[in-house]
View 1 (cartoon, rainbow, N blue to C red):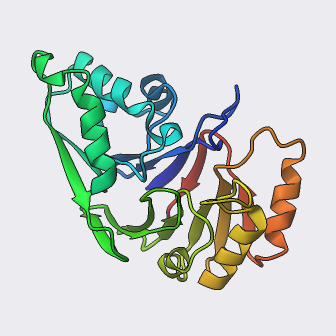
View 2: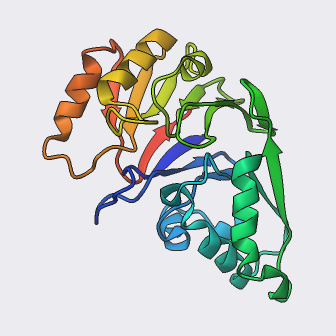
Amino acid sequence: MAELIIMGSAFAIASAAADNSHLVLRGDNETYLIDCAGRPVPRLKSIGVDCADLSGIIVTHFHPDHTYGLSILLMDMWLLGRKHPLKIYGYKACIDKVAALMALYDPHLWPGMYAIEYVAITETPNAALLNSDEFEITTTPVEHMIPCMALRIVTKATGHVTTYSADTQPCQTVIDLADNADLLVHEATGVGLGHTSPRQAGEVAQKAGAKALILTHYDVHHPDPERMLAEAKTAFAGDVQLAYDFMRISLG
C-alpha cells in the first residue's frame, strides 16, 4: 500500500523533536524523497528505506531548510555503493543551483560515482513531473520568494489524490491543484511573505473541496499547537491534523 511519510514537520527553525520539512512518497516498488533536510541516511533507515534504492528526489525550491541535507545524501549513497543513476527533479532555477552546489564537492573525482540526471520541470500549471508504474505527479508554480512548486500526486492503484503545497502564500494555483483532492498537505508557517497561516490553509482546503487537511511546515516551538488546528477548523469543514515527524499517511 502506498504511503506518504512526513520526515520533517518544522518550518525553517527546527527543534530536537521536529526536523525541517521534507517527505517520503513510498509505493510497493518506488520511493521518492521530496526535499531533503536533516540526517537523511539514518532517518530514511529508521523508516525502512535504503537510500541506495531511492527512485528519485524532488526538490520543491532552493531554500536551505529544504536542501541542506542533499549533498551529504548524494555522497553517502556513493559511499554505500549505489551504482544506478539518480534523477533529481525541480524547476530549472532550482536544479541549476543544486548542480552548482554539488560541483563544489568535485563528485567527478569520486571513483565509481553514479550518474545524476537533473530533470528540469516546466514552470507552468499542471506540468508533468513523472508518470511511473505507481504514481503520476504534476506540478504548478506557487507564490513564494523564489520559484517553488506544489505537487499533485495520484496513486494509480487506488486513485487517491494528494496535493502538497510546499512553501507558499495562499494562491489560486494551489486551490486548482488540490481540486477534490483526498488530502491536502499544506504549510502553516504563519501570515507573511511567501507563507500561509493555519486559517488560510483551511480556507485553501475548503475552496479546493479537499476531503482532509494536514498542516505542516509550522512553528514547532508554538506553546499551543492545538490553537493552530482550531484556527484551520474555523475555515475548513473536513478533517484537520497537525503533521509530526514520521507520521505515516495511507494513500489508499
